[in-house]
Image (cartoon, rainbow, N blue to C red; front, top):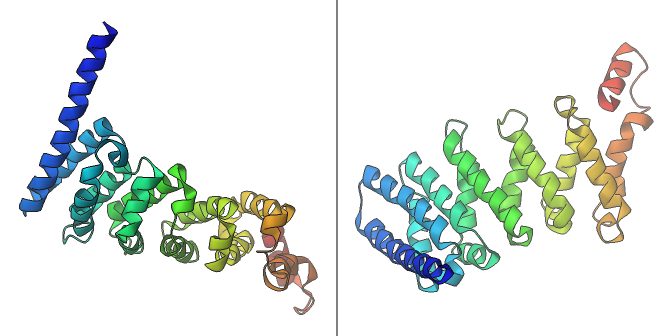
Amino acid sequence: MSKYVDLCLCIWFEKGVEALKQIRLQLEAETGTNARNQLLLQLIDISKIVGSIHINAPNEVQPLLLILRSLCVDRDQTIRSQTFRVLRYLATDAPTIRAMLSLNIDLLVSRSLERDSKYLWERMHALKFIRRMMAVDPSTISRSIVQSLVSIADFPKDDFRRVCLDAVRELVVVQPGLVASCSGLKTIVDSILSPTCQDIAGSLTLTLIFLLDQDRTRRYMRPSADILTLLSVFTDTSSPDGPEKEVSFFEKIL
């Protein structure tokens, strides 16, 4: 019985790899938006069957990613959003993600993430793809992606500020040097002192305490900038005493 099941799974898997190739060929020839959208939806289902294309379909890695890269800059927002969904499902291991990075797909992800708020679905799927990269192997996160996350986390009016700030907080634990070089620590410090982020200031502060507690990460904290800014709420003597100063003080520490 088990041999029969294994045989069925093998045939099913081989059909999945062949279907992957056929859809790639159809994507190369198809130009219609609706048709491409349907093909991308089928590709998502097939990628769940095939699993790691780097291991199970190595000959399809480069050709398929080249097609998907061109779709990342398609004129239609729906196509771009679906393409990021496909990339997310294909990003099952570090070698596949590195193949994507070799084609500079990370730059296209950053481009979509930084779009205006009206491109909600595209931005959301771009961010989900970044979260998948972080879950699979945080070391694959590129500098361009971190810069995009930090820039959005710095912008108070952006709807994605909180989720990008949370991503920066997670990344600084595993990639402190990269995040620090992109001014990510300054963003965390400023967010701790921001009245609009007081509900997450505790978790951000614990992250900085963790960095200060480790020898390998302590050196990324700048005493004259980051730490001094945090302590300024207790040591600020330049402002005159009065009700406004007391209100500002308690807003920062509460």
